[in-house]
Length: 414
Image 1 (spheres, rainbow, N blue to C red):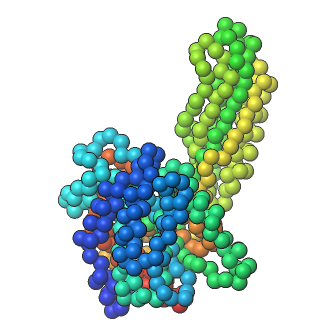
Image 2 (image 1 turned 180 degrees about the vertical axis):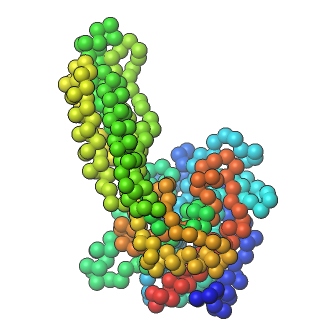
Image 3 (image 1 turned 60 degrees about the vertical axis):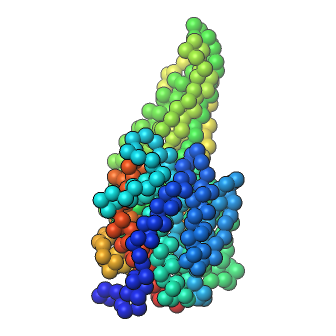
């Protein structure tokens, strides 16, 4: 296909940049810092915008004031294209030149917390759904917007707990609900087909308290924790030297000890110390196996360390959060459709991988469908920073690309 068809151009003509920017600004004003606030106001705005577009909206309470949103549009019989987003934003923090939740439009850029991650992308998705539905009401489209993506993914976990798996759907003889998923996270409009997952572990070391004047009477959990941290660092160096999981797309897993808590005072041998650890996982890795392995390594390292009363140290761990990664074959139809759609929308897109994590892995694993991440703005240089901003021209290109992807995948599924 060389450029949009006449029917596609009729859809694209319905996309209005001023309206997209206004919707994104309204979503920014709705705040939703996580942790610290709920997403209630953002979801209320989203529901209104989706209903205005003609979608049927279903809200699912995940926690008080925190609702997942599922917007469905189109009266056809085929499976839907699923767009995925989240309604929370990271805390604004310091360093802003104005109110982070009063959007500013300067030099063609929309500035405000969430402009990039990811209320600009949500506004573009809703605009695309509305435009497609106006011209092709038979095309089925869905938007799933989860809460708590920026923290522990309770919204995504609730969704997959409620939704039948692909295996369950097939066993019941029912059609699969979705053909593919487009995650509207900021990728600079590139088409991301490979994404590492994010896993959080809590590792607790327990020893025995004693007076600091007689340390031999106790067993220091902090000394054991130092060995644990070194063990994790050793493993981090080991896996960093391995061959990339998918050359050119994603590399290896990684470790980060992000927080340590332990001890009661300088004159007391610490009886407990807790490590809060991030492990970025590859699509094929299982968090439970990683945790079991690292705990065994830590126990062995402590036993052979020569530390005082090492035999009195116990090491336990728990999985605090697990967001799986995913891999969609780069030469499969959905990535190619996305790349061509961005080009026909007036932008450029290349196929690549992502160093961050997103909830697309939940969808890929649960529904067994191809997933790509594609959205306006740059996650590395613009998201989670003061003066977060997105080029408004990219919002329009994203909306145009989403509409073309919907039309072309919708046509292939009918």
